[in-house]
Image 1 (tube, rainbow, N blue to C red):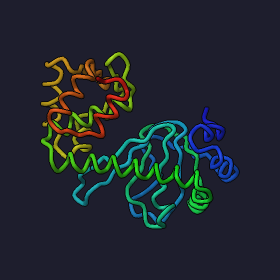
Image 2: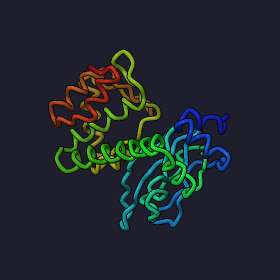
Image 3: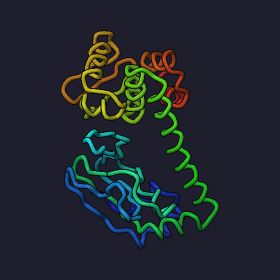
Image 4: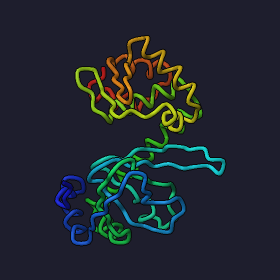
Length: 238
């Protein structure tokens, strides 16, 4: 069961100590939204249990999935830092437990010392680097290459062992499409090709990449996406 003590494993110790008295636990059911796009709120959340989805939906109903957030990850810090409206929707994929921190307290505590300010700066730079990667992919790569990059990121998140990664549950083909800016049919075609090529195997919502090094080589040859390649190699995919 999630405990506030878990914060000490996620935040810098001095920051966890400052914030712990002000934290409250929030429990969500599947499908429940915790942040809405353009909301005028600033609470910061840390995921203790479960997974949430960050997304935007156009007026025409098109869904764009920006990220999935799992245990140990933090979200909501943008509005706490700049006091602007929320930049996306965040909803629970399944049952979740979150630690909720008032935004103004998070900001003042994080900026109270060079150590915690550097931690926050590194966190925000990490977000920028990932957005830069995805912006490059969306504007410079063909659909199949965008899918390869997204698969490699999912392998890294799932954990690579013995050149293999099991993504469970894997995104649906429609969700893959919403992640990389395409349509479901294009995703289905490329996943079938990768399956026949022996790179991956999919059974229901379980997707196993049996040769992560080969997938990494495909990404390197097609895109030169240095960021995601370096992370994959660092996890043992080369």
